[in-house]
Length: 171
Image (cartoon, rainbow, N blue to C red; front, side, top):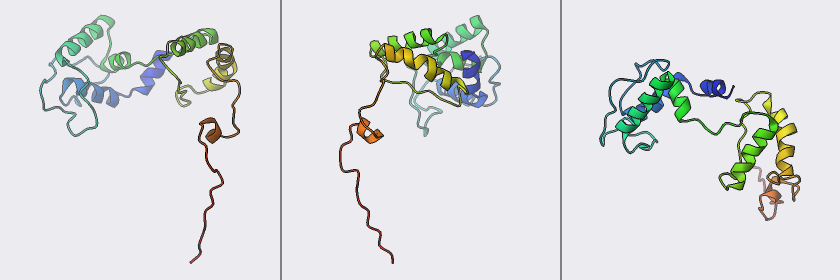
C-alpha cells in the first residue's frame, strides 16, 4: 500500500525532472514508465539546473547513474519507480503498535522532533491514527497528553500583550 501511495505522489513529469538533475540534460522525451537512459550524465560546470533553485546533489553523477542502472535492472524498475525508491521517505506502515514503535524509536534517537501527517495522501487514515497510534505514543511519553496554555501562542511560549489595539481612522 505504501508503495502505491508513493507512486501516486511522484508524477511522470516529476520523475523526469528529478532524473534530469543527475543526468544534467533534457530528458523530456523519455517515458517515465520506461527504462533509464542509456546515455551517460553530462559532467561539468554547466548544469541543466542552472538558474533553477536546485543544488547539485551528486558528487559523482556517473557512479550514481551506474548504481541506479544496476538497481533498476535488478529490480526491473522504470524511471518513475526508481525515483520513488531513491527518494522514498520513512514509511510508517503496519499495525498501530508497529507504527508507534517506529515513531518512538526515531524520537528516542533524536532523529526527529516531529512528524507531518498529510491528509490528502492518507485519506481516511488520520482518524485511525489519532484513535490508535496517538494513545500509544502518549503512553511512551513522546506525544503530549495536555497543553499548558489555552492558545497556540501560549503553547509556543510567545509571551506578550495579545490585546494589541488597532486604531481605525475613517477618511
